[in-house]
Image (cartoon, rainbow, N blue to C red; front, side, top):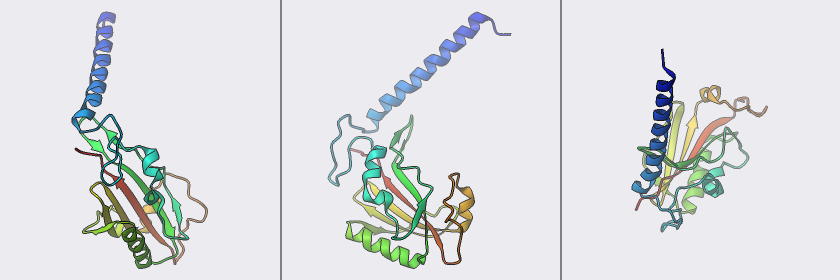
Length: 184
């Protein structure tokens, strides 16, 4: 049985612990090299935490093969500073197209390389990936294209447009555009 005085003490301790974690998280940002002022690095990326608005404003955040249908995008996720780690800003998008995957890869290669991106060796494959390609730009940006299996569709939690029913000539792929945190 908890005595009322002990219950108040426990409540105060929990509140203090929460405040301590918040204070450490805020202080941790300065230890992670996050600047209070927002300038640009030599590649034009912000030196402060990357916001959803910034990553969404980049053309790569919505770059899909012409004539494709994109779905499953909740918009860009901002850079997040946690107590002991930092998550980069990113956009993850699923796309359906009537084009073959080699055609899609060729289009991305032409667009990305003409905009300063370099082909990167090895692309991470998600659990439903068939194959993938990766590109880097500067020291903080990456762009991955992954040919996905149609088994991925059952994992989505968003309502599908009526058009998204696999036809024999449709290809499912995903893109992920990432901007890593700035480090001095």
